[in-house]
Amino acid sequence: QKEVEQDPGPLSVPEGAIVSLNCTYSNSAFQYFMWYRQYSRKGPELLMYTYSSGNKEDGRFTAQVDKSSKYISLFIRDSQPSDSATYLCAMQQAGTALIFGKGTTLSVSS
Amino acid sequence: KAGVTQTPRYLIKTRGQQVTLSCSPISGHRSVSWYQQTPGQGLQFLFEYFSETQRNKGNFPGRFSGRQFSNSRSEMNVSTLELGDSALYLCASSLVPGSNQPQHFGDGTRLSIL
Image (tube, rainbow over all chains, first blue to last red; front, side, top):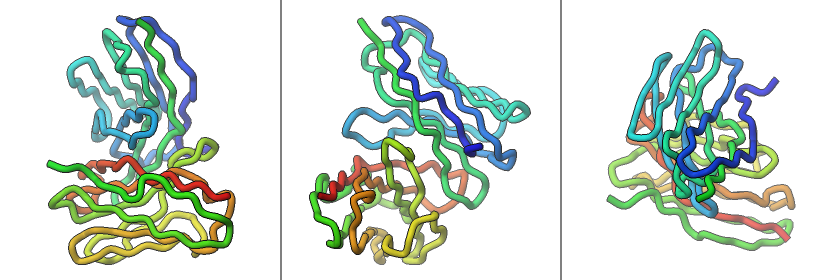
């Protein structure tokens, strides 16, 4: 079992839809959870950064962490064509390297 | 504020050659990490440097090496290139090492091995 599992998609939605992206993990020691967005031919861009369980909201983006279920989610409200990208979850325990999911490719059509 | 800068953006090499990639972190950031991104394996951690010292190392062969200079700029070197080394190599910087310091990525160097 890989440490971090992420459905690669592709996921296609119409403009304005609510998008739900998810990752599961096996290492209960992970404490820090991140979502990155990566456009084609660009590096990953940090979207959300959370510590431990709970929710965090930033504009149209909401990140949720459920440590009891070892499950994290990113919700995108009112999705836009500019949200079309690959979304990578990443997690980390204290003092160690980031572990990434393989990414979910999202396409938002206008 | 300038972001993480990686040079060159693209490289083409042949098997057996060696290559050096460069990374300039965000101003004030002193920790630099390197990752390899491939379609099959995703993003995999190579190594992390802070104060010119390697702090962490991923599960890659010794052909992959790196260093950091006193101005926090970093280089990574791959010797005896193999076809499987074709990938996007990403550099990320943070203020200091530590899990409460988010990492910010450059746009990478795309390395193609012929």
